[in-house]
Image: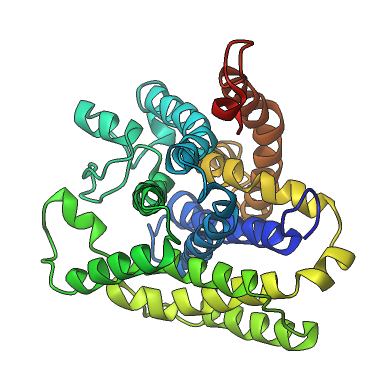
Length: 353
């Protein structure tokens, strides 16, 4: 481990996963705003960054929750920490998107105002949008709906004061199997019947192996990671229940090997990669504001070349993510944490974070 006990390799992987999603949405922007062909020229395989994220999430929960298992308030503390980490920045992004829907409709061509949809967006609940998709106001936030479900399930398992893996994994597998039977158009609760949830379980399995001392030779690990990433560059034929196989298994191998190479990576990976990993959440959320703006502006000023739009979109998104993380996310998290600071009258046993 490196940099305060965190896996430097996993930090870098978080950034790469977010960047893959940015590339996908950049190709969508170029197709819509510059070529005028809609989503016909999208690099859909970049969406596999989400699958990497889900495996990383399961991995991080499996590692970070270990010290909390023995605590009577472990499940409560776990949920509080996850809410403090996820909610503030997402609510800011959702509020900004709500404002943009009214103030700058040219940037929000996929969103319209619907009060029930807006409320569901803030509460991380599935709700059909104007395009008949289960996506919140901030479109990329659909992944957080799954994240929150996983956190609740994980916290429930923690209340039993046992290793969550034997409880969580069968539930996720059961939901995946039920997903094979769900109709194409069903009620909102069927959103949770999806094999993609298994990827959180893959992450828990990776954490279990790492905690048991799994390591991998760097040369072998690099080969496996490269081959696994190559799966994301083949034409996308995976959807529904097959996605957890086509993209989930390669994502599991990538996360496991990167974590297993940590003794090597912590010596060779630059420390700034940790910052990029920290900024990945801001990059993931806020590139969805910046990328469409690039398309609108370049068209208006007559500089709508695809290669230039791609360069400005990708590089600018990274800068926006870094700035939002440093000047908005970090202060927000600091404020939220300060609310939980123990007062002189709070027993120490109740105040430990």
